[in-house]
Length: 420
Ligand code: PMP
Image (cartoon, rainbow, N blue to C red):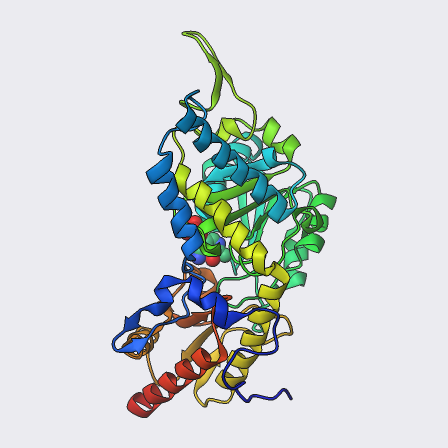
């Protein structure tokens, strides 16, 4: 049994200097209902460090020009910073080359690119697509709708009551008709970490391609694309300290090259005539129109910030917070956490109180300055499979502390006093 004492004072036991890095996040200075903010809604969106805010502001004040089209200095500066961010993303995720990185709007947009391009071109009647019950709607609905359009079979692998993927059910639904498997790396509700490499190898053995939804892994742990073994991954930059409005689609170069563009128009062409259009090469053929330039550049600054602390150190800090949070929740009567705890569990706890509705819990916690989320977290099939109508979710990040967990626990105890 681990010690459930809260370390007093400074955050100890991890390589992160949390007290120092907290000063980089202006939002952490806010008071909410008379209390210092405890921000535990990081699965939905993270706070932004000053360096990211400054980098966006520099774009708008110094070089607010369009990319790729101009040869004047401001456009060149914007283009250089925009493409430099692609190099940073490729290095951050260990992609083979920057040109495998496609900028999108968010994870949902990345997955729709795969469904709308690769899926439209390669899925047909009689084919099957396999997903799991633990998917975020972003990695569920596009595949379901693609199957409906194409006359393909939409297969859904079940989860066990522990929250883990039911591997027997997965195996029984994977067969030579399966053309694509899509699965979350980390669940945004139970924080289950799926063995993507193993699952991708299984998919490849039947000739299917594998899509990993990395929206909740890339921000919280080191992710090495080449080791992961998927064919496509998707994630959202605003979930790793970057601005809203930019996401990442990574695909194997040979797949990206073989795919038709998802959207057509300006910026994605090589040559246009009345009769014919020749498309640009990947990744540009997938980036139609003027992109969210400042946000992409801000994403580069966010990667610089994360790399300054190191993803391994961030992961270890979060795992320690996760251990502590789950231990404290386990001590509370009437609290049911979705999914079993496991070593290395990312710092997400979705829970249900026997005595209060999740919306009431979230509202009461907000009164105490603690920001959590309540509802289905865009994972209705998972809640349905586990027999829950909704849950309250606390999700932590590199700037969170043991003391903040104590504040959430104290607030839940007050909810218990009022409602139980
Ligand atoms: N997948 C997972 C696992 C997520 O947690 C989320 C966002 N909560 C998404 C997909 C969708 O992300 P976005 O809304 O940025 O497209």
